[in-house]
Length: 205
Length: 180
Image 1: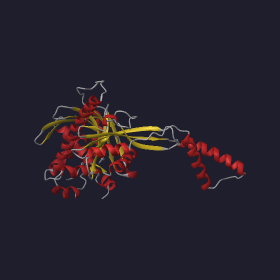
Image 2 (image 1 turned 90 degrees about the vertical axis):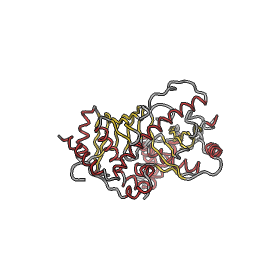
Image 3 (image 1 turned 135 degrees about the horizontal axis):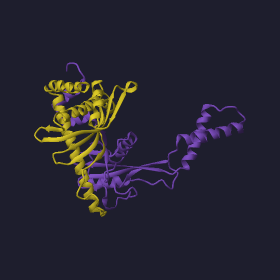
Image 4 (image 1 turned 45 degrees about the horizontal axis):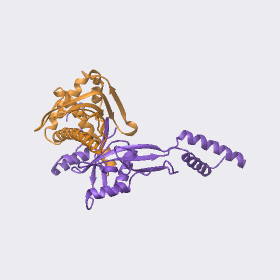
């Protein structure tokens, strides 16, 4: 569902704010500063950053692959070590049973159980391989809009944070009401704001 | 109003647009006249999701199938539900044919099948060829978003103007026909 191949799914954002200085120089510097850092050989749980839309392993952006005409094209890559709830519950229960036996107590208090669960989670995270997810974006400089090629809430949240951190610019999602404000002349905005839902089934208008 | 409130409180706007677009496309066998531009072709296809209510009271109706079976979706409109998603075939003035699922709440585009391009299947992977193919796809995506925005603008001009009352009467007649 990405920008460069196959079927696409996307949502629209407007970009709020401006970047000082030479746009492309700043983009080059910031994109590289916030490029994706691999965690395959570390014990980190999570990493997010920019890679090329053409190659998820290219975080060095050879040939300025973030530029296409008057568009910035990037992919946000997020790698995460995930532990399934079933796995966590199984090993936490096992560890609780071991501790109860060791301490010769019939039950553990809530705080102790929470502590055990967190220790087990960390142990399992370290044994897990990071799962990658890649989401493309296309930033139109002419329209100051960003198309983000996913409508997954978690991915959209990550994008908004990473974009703000990288470029110091806000992304504002454009649901129909905000799109309508963009499409209508300012004198119609009051009418739009006062609009009430219409009944499409029966009755008088 | 913050963004979440806007999405929740103004959700009806996107749903009304999508439901109106369905009505509009059936009025003239898919042809929708855009002012100063002429006809674009909008056909609703095989998949619709209708919703009503919020939270625990939310009801959903999914309709899949051929045109005849979309009758059930029309009955859904009659029961007060509105379109939340619909699969649409849209042929723009540039004669490009797109297939997409349009979402009403976020005005999001899902599973968009772009028209075939001259360079599709091109295996060259040097930087210039990649950039050229990407720009070609961006141009098509922009053609699609422009067409949907033009349709939305047409809806808004009706919805906020004096012609809406007449339009709404026609929509209600069309919805009523579903029960006949």
